Image (spheres, rainbow, N blue to C red):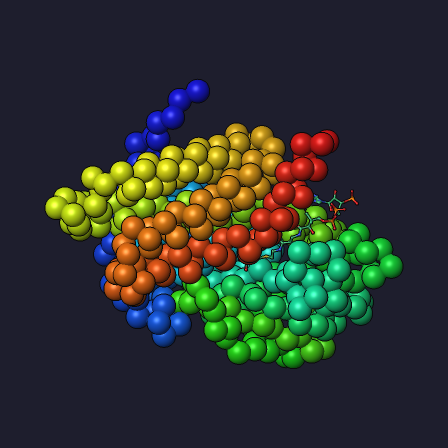
Length: 379
Ligand code: CAA
């Protein structure tokens, strides 16, 4: 066992750190305030190869490992979680899903432009009445011979407005419950497919979250992913990797808030000395650092297991459960360390605190992670 990153991983980490400082930090407060999608920044992330990080170079990917991916997610999330969620969804849910389970034709047509960042993808599972209970899909995909007729509504879809390619989960054989579910590749512009208004959110306000409506959308048969009825397993397998990405996002949010709190505590003086020298603050910093380090070990371990081709269901859920809790706890403490300044936007920590909350909700709430972990432990 060793804990060192390789030369290549260190270089990638540095590249992401530089990108976050130079390209994401300027304007991050305004994008949050005005709910502005980081269009230019996402384009540059694609040029850097960060939108198809683990995809084989033959499909325009960067061919990197999952450790490199979590390093990038961590660095970007320290500064701008609205941008990093685009990276997470495109890499873990969309590119991974297509590369692992798509046909050669689907990879050629859809994966290549997604991995290069020329196009952005979205993963569409959640519905008004099927969030955690993902087997209860109300969206239907009726088999009409050479096409499927798609009808229904999806909610809270990240990249909902900006995406061009949507992986949509829908029920084809309701009597078979989860074994009747399919996954489809749907293109923006298909007749009957409309994007609803953008959600006005607590956090990750720069990211683009919409509901989607499908009204008699004809999806060609060759756009189904996997065998008939494979859709639920497809969603579960894809989300397993997604949870590692979101765990890394939570880790980055916590680390970003911790760095700001530490810096501020060394500069701010009260009662004749920097507040970092008051035990009340010093102990907070010690707790934050320890929690973050524990979260980091869980996140890196989950990514490492994935890289080794070993099972990572439990490790990914543990990483997400713990890192998202740490993100919430640490960002609240970071605001507290900043006192009144922490409550105003210019100091960044209030945004990180708001952004942290979603990491306990999307790609499976903390309660869902506990379900997954407890089932694995009992098994
Ligand atoms: N891998 C492979 N198969 C799996 C699996 C996994 N990880 N988890 C479950 N399955 C299979 C089971 O083996 C079972 O198949 P069989 O009947 O053939 O044995 C089938 O799926 C049903 O499994 P369960 O009986 O365990 O299903 P369940 O209804 O009890 O619940 C759940 C499973 C884990 C709770 C699941 O519903 C779940 O993960 N829910 C949360 C969904 C979620 O994460 N939503 C997030 C939306 S996406 C998002 O947020 C993206 C974004 O925009 C950022």
